[in-house]
Image (cartoon, rainbow, N blue to C red; front, side):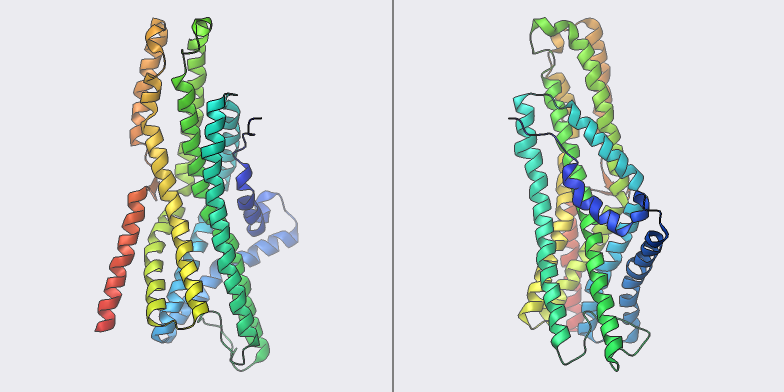
Amino acid sequence: MSARIDSVRVYRPFWWCMRLMAPTYFGATQRPARIYMVAVHLLVTLMFPVHLLVNLALQPTSAELFQNLSISMTCAACSLKHVAQIYQLHDMLEIEQLLIELDGYVEAEAEQHRYYQDHLQRQARRFTRCLYASFGVIYALFLLNVLILIVSADRELLYPAYFPFDWRGNGYLYALALGYQSVGILLEGFQGISNDSYGPLTLCFLGGHVHLWALRMRKLGHEGTALAAKNHQQLWAYIEQHKVLMRLHYLTRHSISVVQLVQLGSSGASLCLIVSYVLFYVRDIITVLYYMIFLAVICVQLFPSCYFASVVAEEISSLPYAIFSSKWYEASSEHRRDLLIFTQLTLGGRSRVIKAGGLIELNLNAFYATLKTAYSLFALVLQVKDI
């Protein structure tokens, strides 16, 4: 039995996270829901990165400086990406409807279903499992660290930060500060899951549906002479499907642009800070393990978007060949004329590149450039430390 074509099912965790963080955008208009949303975005999205960054002005030690920067930059980037996604929710809802429409175009044919099940669906599941597993492991270690701090005689925070009260001298205030950081990190995690899952998944399905459309287009006219009279009508149906694909491409490019710009900008610096902090200042194995997994999570955040964007660019560039592979040479003159015009239009797809913030082309080169940037910053840290 053929696999059910359902591209939006894997988005459920993303929508759960968005409903948790922004319930009023999904019909929750009650006063408690509005108060909750304002409180969450004021205390977590805004104030959590701020209370970490303010500590930098209090002349921390070198170890505290690197520890603070590694988490404050990550949290600030997470908050910025979350705000950008909230502003793009209307585009994301339209993208979901376009994916449902494209799922309906997939024909009941073995090759297309096999590609969807064995390639497209498997890639999406592999990515989401890797992402959720990395978050699960890092938050398991995070909770272990919280338990260690609770039972410890020394009053220490999860991360060096500023609070407008003396949390060291009062047990209740210490519990309040530690609880705020614990809840803040947990909610930042839900923001992180929504930030880091949407872009790669959408690019994955965009590239997959472009490939599926190309499979259908290649077979046009090869079904036999009995269907020759319907080929021109089928061509126009494929042109309409192509319009849906290009609309999906535009919305995807528009909705992930700012998120990916922040991702690229913060990842290089975060990688450098984490490696520097672990090499120079961390001595206990739990903290080393925590930050090594943290390092892997940052790579998991960055690599899939760059990879799937490269796949999309390759699939878009191959569309003219898919059109040429149809049996146009035995079609009518009207059919060949329309096909020629359509082919000329798809040649413009080579310039439809996905850019982060409209500045940086999103592909594997961007991933490698980010790693090179992280290494350059780390070399600079080594030189400064030697001085």
